[in-house]
Amino acid sequence: MGGSSSKKNTNTTPVWTPTTVTKPAPVPTTAPRALYELIDASPEKVSEGCLHLYTMETFLRTEMNKFLREANKEKLVTYGPFLRLLYFTFNEPSTVEVHSTTVYHGMNLIQSDIDFYKRSADDNTTLQWMSFTSTTASREFAESFGTNTLFIMELKKVYEKEKRSIDIDISLKRTNQQEILLSVGIEFTVEKVHTIFYTFYGVV
Image (cartoon, rainbow, N blue to C red):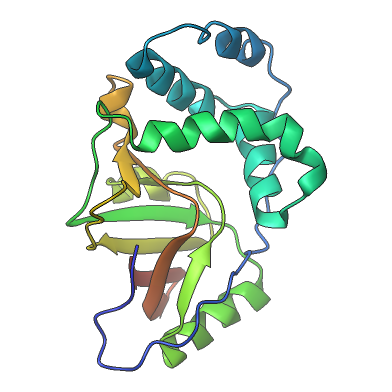
């Protein structure tokens, strides 16, 4: 969500797609039925239902974000309707925006991606993640996944016309994950890299 507060000049914003190592998600059995049940629901219920579907361990989140990163127009018919609802959810009045806090996001990255982020820190380059990104306010929870990379991100910028980071736990009435969802196209700068195991400190 915005550029760095560093004194260096910010360069142009490249779209960067990390080469993450992920396991295939299981095929869902309840997701289509849950989406069907949102028909004619109130805006608040649609928002809650979309976030619930997004957080389910199904192909929907994985494949939809892959579609966003690759910009494959052939799959627009498949994922476009749900994407539209998810964008709507970010600006639905019942969703709670989050800023002025620190969030954490784990990834399994290959060495070339790690080197890229190191160079970005040196150059003060503004980057974008072209997918929805789940983060958590709990460092302990983020580290429990055992990834080789941890992003520590400070949410500083407040947008006047749209929400770019929302509290999923509040919307879903849960407290166990402290999950903050970042919108597509979130901008950030890498300020430093800690190499005991790869930790990226950034500002969005």
